[in-house]
Image (cartoon, rainbow, N blue to C red; front, side, top):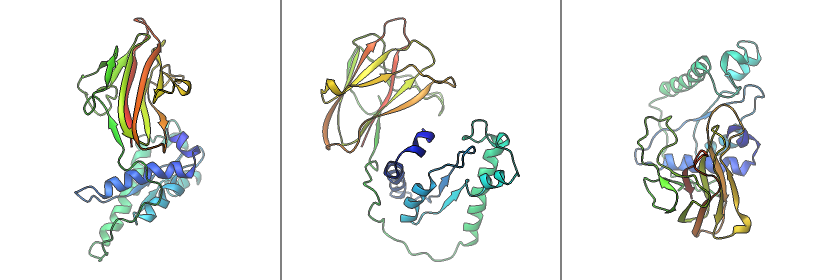
Length: 264
């Protein structure tokens, strides 16, 4: 997901970021917000140019790992292998250094406690802000039509126990149908190493000629992937029908697992 984010356009990078920021800033408890910009340690790429533009619009501070830990690594203080195994996700030492930058920022804030700051109303959005009211639909909050698919009511065993509370289908012809009100739609499903896996197609508003292929067979080797597939982006707001049908599968294949439908 991170690699794709860096390659996408500025608007796409800012939109979900602003929606998240506005959701947090309007929360009843009025939490403090700091934007943390991580980095690809192999290339120095990150999205802080776009994310910080949103942060500055809302007068939110930011911490940059590219401008601190990464620069020290380039200067020879650490090797890339000391900080991360894959070039993106920090290991224990990498996390310790990231946490150190956050602590240093928070200490600087504490030193300024007592200084008066005027309270401003939330400004108008910087972007089209399509995702502020985004909702993730699972068996906990929606009841789609099930034609061969089954609901997964197993209890999650922890925050890393991802594949729960969704729906699964296995045999060709199994279908699941949602009726949702939205202008943006995406599906979240499992791509698995346990091949062969059942594959499906997604039909939006009955347009079979524009069907989207959902291939549950994962081409990487690091583990099952919680994959996000965009379906509708800035479409007409209103009721839409989302139908997912198994096109390849039988009792011997790994079931197609639908994590959620995401709408905004």
